[in-house]
Image (tube, rainbow over all chains, first blue to last red; front, side, top):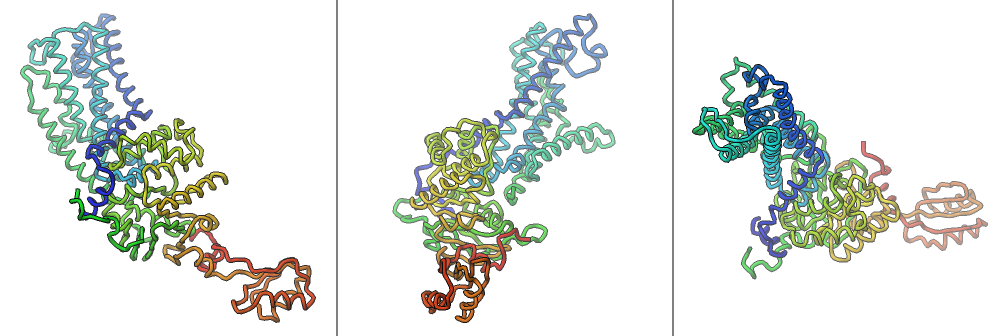
Length: 295
Length: 327
C-alpha cells in the first residue's frame, strides 16, 4: 500500500511537505473573511468600550465606581478609574464567562457541520484534504480564533482604558506595586491564558460539529452545552464534579496578577483544558474518520 | 521516494485497462435501505463512460463510494488500480470530481473558491496555483466572472465553476455527476465539447446523466442502473443494437398497409393516423421485398424504413419501464 502510494506520488513532480500547510492558511483566511466572524469580533471589541464609557460616566457623577462601592460587579472594575490598564482585566472578566466562549462555540460548532451543510465538505474531501488533516486544520483555526478573539477584547480594552483613564504603575492583588511595563506584560500573559482556557470548550464544539450536517444545530448545541455546564458549576450540591468542569478554573487567571505570581490554579486549568482537548479531540477524530459523507 | 528504476510503471497495479473496477459493491444505509446491490462495474481506460439510471437508482451512492466519501457495506472498489477508500490520498489528486452539483462558498469570489479547493490538495504546487486556477476558469468560460462573489452566480455559472474545480490539475479520471444540469443549450454544447476534448487528451470520463441523448452523443461506453442493481454495461453501440429498431411506414392507406404487413408476418403493428409502425422484421427479411409487396397491393407510400433503436428504447427494453423516479 504505502509503496504503491509512494509510487504514484513519485510519478508526479517533486512534492514539498510544506504544501500540506496550504490548507491551514486557506482555512484561516476563509474563517476571518466570513461576515459572521467579523460580526462576532465586532461585538467583542464593543464590550470594553461600553464598560469604559459606563465607568467614566459613573465617575463623572461623583459616585464611587462600580455597584456597591466596588464590592460587587465584575472583578477589577473598581480599579479602572485609577488605572486604565485594569479595563483589560475587567473586560476579560466580563467576556470570559459568556461572550468569548459563545463566539468560540459559534465558530467551532460551524467548523465541520457548516461545510457539510453547504456541501463544500465533499469537495474538500475529494480534493483530497484528508479527514485527519482537515480535522486538525479546523481545530487549529478554531484555536487561532480563540486567541484572536481574546486579543481583540484585550487590545480594545487597552485602547479605551488608555484613552479615558490615567495609566501608570499597577497595584497587584497582593498589594505590591509593579511598573506599567510589567503590568502590560502581565496583561499579555493573562490574555494568552484566557485564550488557552477555551481550548477544551473548542474541542467540545469541534466534536459536536462532526455529529450533524446542520451548522445551526451544531452551534446551538455547543452554546447550549456551555450554558448547561456553567449552571451545573454553580449548584453547590454538585460540588463533587465541579473540579472536572471545563469552566471551573476560568477565573483563575486573576492569580497571575498576584506578586509573586500564583500558578497553582492556572496550571490546573491548563491541565483540565488539555484533558478535554484529548478526550473530545479523539472523539471528534473517531467520529469524523468513520462517518459517511452524504451531504 | 522509492529508488529509481524499481518502479517503472507504478500505475498499472491490477486489472490493466480498467480505471474503475468494483466487485460486489454494496451499500446498505442505516435503516436497512439497500442503495447499491452487488455492483460489478468496469470502466475501461480512455473511455467516456455513461452512467445511466433514474433518480434514486443508486448512481450517486456508487459515485460517493468510488470517491471514498462513504464506506461500502461489502464488496470492493478499485480506482486507478488502487483500493478505495484506503488509497484515497494517492488516488484522488489524479481524479477530478463533480458530485451532486457544485458546492461553493457564497461569500468568496469564483477565483477564491478555486484557490481554496486547490489548497486543500496537499499535492498541488502553491507556486503554480494562481496560473492553474486561471486556466481552469478559462477552460469553462468563467474568466470574465472570476472576481464576482459566487452567491451572485447563476446555476449554470456555479456548474461551470464546479467543473473548473475538477480541472485544477491534469487528471487521469474525471467523475462528472450530471454535468450539464442547469445549463442552457449553448452551455450544454460547450460542456459536451469540453468532455470530448478531455477524452481526446486521454482522460477517462465517468459521466452520470439522466439525459439519454446526452450519453448517446458523447459516450463510448455506458452502464445502466435500476433500483440499486447494474442491469447492463458495455459499448454504447452494442447496448443500442440490443434493442431492435422499429419499422415505420407513412401512407394515406394505413388500414390496407397494416393488413398487408400482417399477412407478411410482421408483428407488433400499430396504426396512428397515417403512420404505421411495427417491430423491425428479423435480419433475414429483405426490406425491399416488404415495400414491393405493399406497393403491389396498391398501398401508396410516403415513406418507408427502419428507425434505428435509440438508447432510450434500449433502456425501456432493459428495465421494462419508463425513465421515471424509482419508488
